[in-house]
Length: 177
Image 1 (cartoon, rainbow, N blue to C red):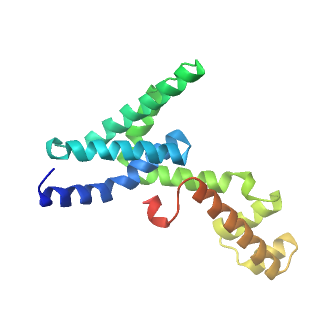
Image 2 (image 1 turned 90 degrees about the vertical axis):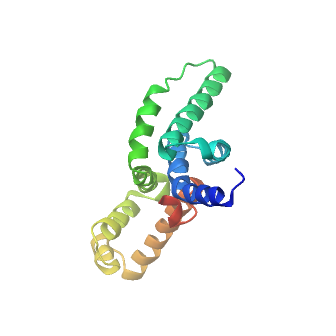
């Protein structure tokens, strides 16, 4: 890839597809470091073949399938377990049709993960405010606490959910797009 116009087109494609590719890999591998490594491999190969690729989306989809197959093949050979990659390929096809699907999955996992709550009461507080639109005062009254207590505990829950998302590789809202 020598032409600057071609490099500009690659950068544009990279910016468009990187969040989707990373999101798909992260949701399948459940490991931010592995997803980053494989994503880097995919985009290095994408750059090397960019000028000869007719459909960027289609090529990236096949590259993801190939890399995930390799990942699980290597993993199963180390663990002496057979891994069926067919289910991952079907999910990848669905995810690539709508890149936001995986972002919703990651967010839902963060919200559903009980490690982000100190108690069932915290979960109820979060649902009342975030899902049902209660004010801090209304949620606090329902749970027998002051407005300030509700606001403080909600802030703690929110911080734990943000930390969870960071562990999953989501550093900014842009990472979800």
